[in-house]
Length: 365
Image 1: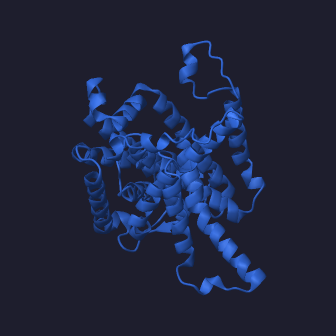
Image 2: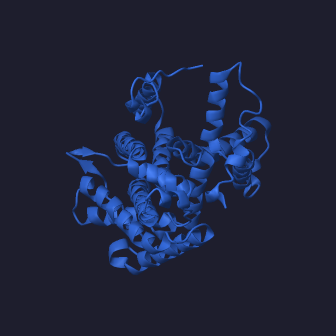
Image 3: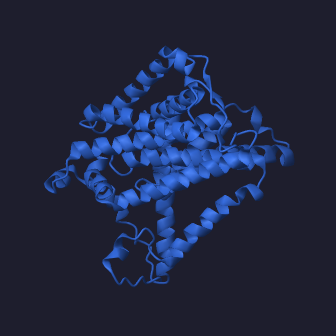
């Protein structure tokens, strides 16, 4: 059992709980940095895709996991980020200016629609965000001179200071670029949640009545959270556009919004780690199922590829299993395992039973 001896109040708001946690974070970041030297291009591309999905998951986590605002239209902000970045770069703006501009455009649009939308909650807010998605989809088609309309638009190659970061010509450089952006956003996100603003997010999520009693402007807090959520998602959309290369409005379908919601739900609501774990599951599980299917065909001569929709069915069953048997998500399960290991042999079988009633809070009604 680890005992953390705190000598000042600064330890309570430290980004890392103890030195070992700081070391693990550094080792993980170092391992991710040398990943191009350990795997081939296929797995490196999959790792890049996972990082982009994790960035989008962190964006949605701000709204869903930390302020309790359910959104079914976050694919719209992915589209805004992707189209804004591509349009600005096609107009001659460099990537290091186009990327933050794309995030800013998505964030401002999200904050604008959040002003009336945040007064709703639950299924009504979800329907409102779904309507926003439909509006953005129609705008993409109408603004054909900028977005390419139905035909789509090409994301320009990234070149910074004479170095190519093209997704196909220089995949390793593009992976490092995405890794750096994701690490920077994660660091900012973690520090945001330690600030008074982040704590107000949690207060609004857990009980709006109590938050108002503490003097928190609930409407402004939820609008700010939704704007930040949209902005981070817009950054992910810009990177997703460069990863795909050529895209149109069909790339950002409502299925993407549902998958994003699955990322934060299965990964673990209310945790940054959950966004990464959910992204790994969403992007890696279909690949694993396909590899196992091919292995069964090669070793046992059973061709499962002829069964239509088998991969989707198995993947859906796995997701349903997580939702039923582990509502706290992958990170919640890991926390239970970690606490059990830290308290062994004093751990009890029913030490986590109270979580079933804890989930019945105001935000779950």
